[in-house]
Image 1 (cartoon, rainbow, N blue to C red):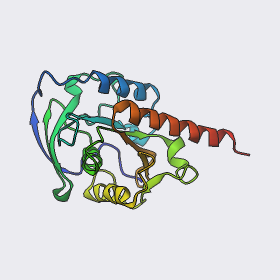
Image 2: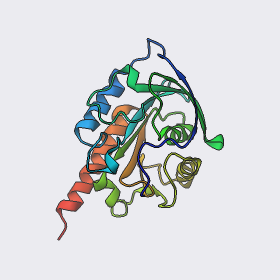
Image 3: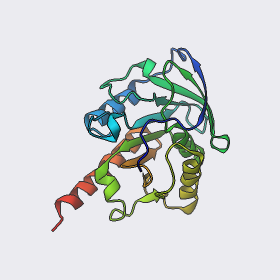
Image 4: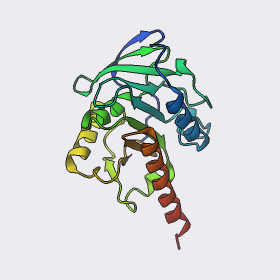
Length: 215
């Protein structure tokens, strides 16, 4: 848990340049802006060595296409992102620890984890990774699924751990899990951005209620 946020660990084949003009970022950007205001995505001087944290993505086509749009690496300091701050993932291979992408920004360090979530079910169209100490610290009391403390973020090991969580059935009821090897790391997913986002807010409210009811 001492690793810095934002360090890309996969092999990246990135084509620098604008992606298609008809790709709409408006909904994705609105939710990202909300999570920035809630300090679940962002950059805080006294946390995580002052580096940016959190990222958000959506699948381009419903029904299982590989391509997805994701916020770029180290954009956490920006209150509102523009198209140039996103990357388009064209393909991802956790088996080979490799990602192919395009855009004016390189993809987030968690892109491999997002890709692994999308691989698990074609209906999943949105993935949100935040840093939320309230939820992370209440993982056990909320009975959240989790990846083990010795599984590092942004790696094939994390991608495999995500696949194992899905296979275990622990994510059938709640599309959210903690990353115990990544300080404060939480991942939520759903069929739509509102579904994943509202689930995240709902679970955060439960965590806050636990904190407030401590004896």
